[in-house]
Length: 328
Image (cartoon, rainbow, N blue to C red):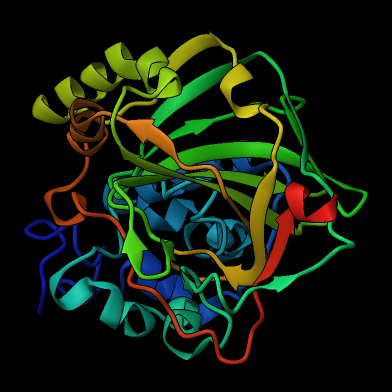
């Protein structure tokens, strides 16, 4: 049996000393309803619940209360990670991508889903859709928080930080995070890195904008957080894991006009692999330096240094193309 203390960064808490772990209890007693609102509040409450449990005072926390926030661990993991500092999946070994679907019942879509992400985009197979519109992005200045999710480094945005318009529907920007190497491929080519901007609508629908990077000149956006990335790495070395308040953060680099993008319906590329996510992979490939990629990887758990899920089968899905030049 795996010990929670000896392997906290691989498969989370398992049964130990005759007691069910918190996550094991959630598997048995909680549904997987997807909530989006009040994520920050539920994050804090879940942190408190986990701490009480781990200190041997589980009876202070009702199972009903825990179930109300269980979706934070499983269904909202793409927005925020669990508050106990552990990661229930990795990118290698027995808890790597090929095993995600078996690590928890709530991760089952990772193994059985038919609309999974990422994918390999074959440019000679994409369908040009003349009805697609330009992506309208309106990102403003915001007091953001830099977080080490252990499986990626991310920036968390407060409410009213801007967003995107997709098919006349508004989606609010919730967070962004990086993968290195890139997850999506273009004609089989894997790029150096990929940035995901995660947006959520009022009714809980999710759309992600993906930006691909090749090695070259430093990326201006990563430059802005370089010093803070060094702080995250330092916290890992001293065994701390605290979000870092960044202060006013301007996302002007992300508001550039989109001349070309690929769209398809997929999933979160990390557990729980929730489907019906609308993906937009921008056609313009940006540059990032090798030093910047190293800085993005440095704070991560050793098993997640290369945090790209393998490409998934299309299973009959179509990838649509928006190309401004083809419209004229």
